[in-house]
Image (cartoon, rainbow, N blue to C red; front, top):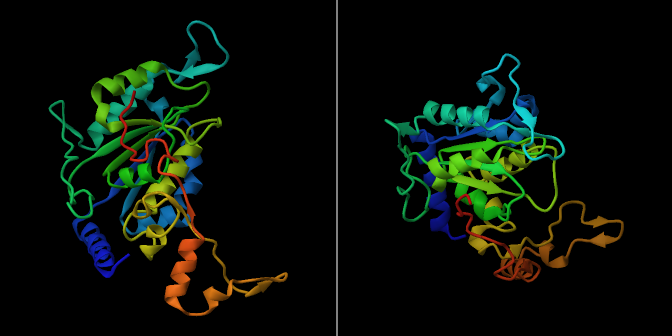
Length: 287
């Protein structure tokens, strides 16, 4: 990355700090305690301490209208297991939208079009949000999604459990917030719920926020970065000692010759075909 690019990033970080641009991340989950230790991890804790991130959970049980606060029920048409009910989740989403001032007189207040022409980051003070549902969908999470979401002011992860979520949640989101909702998968495997996928995606997003990681180059030059057109896997890396069980660090990395080192890194990075990733831009709306 050239000097001008580094200066732009540092200025952007200062602007975020001075003007209070914060990413607000919320998890809708019936197991909010799962996020307690995650909140205290170095990366997340650092972002919160630097006032770059707010972190909260919403339990859909608090939006149930029955005495026992039941959030699940049997599946119509038969089937194994239980399904998360739509009304508590829909009510929780409405609460989140209103609490964060994303609507005014029933109209969305988001200003997703106002972005810096050079950095493509949102102008501090503007509102933009994503409602994210971890789901075995055709869209698979990648670094492009992480960059896209890091430009949002508000993120809401809806974490399903049991056999999933009543389809009417998706239909309501598609009707009310089609441009702001994303169903996404981490891959072709199944977890017990959406909490762990949500944490994984959160880390990918948060580490891109200016000021979270001490050096911008650490994520600009890494695997799958947009600056590398998402087509490079990072080169092999080494640290002390120079020899481990007879395996030596490549001599060129010890030479101090910056040009030769740069060439070695380029030659030893794995180039991927342009179509390696499905939906590389990370901007599909809910289907």
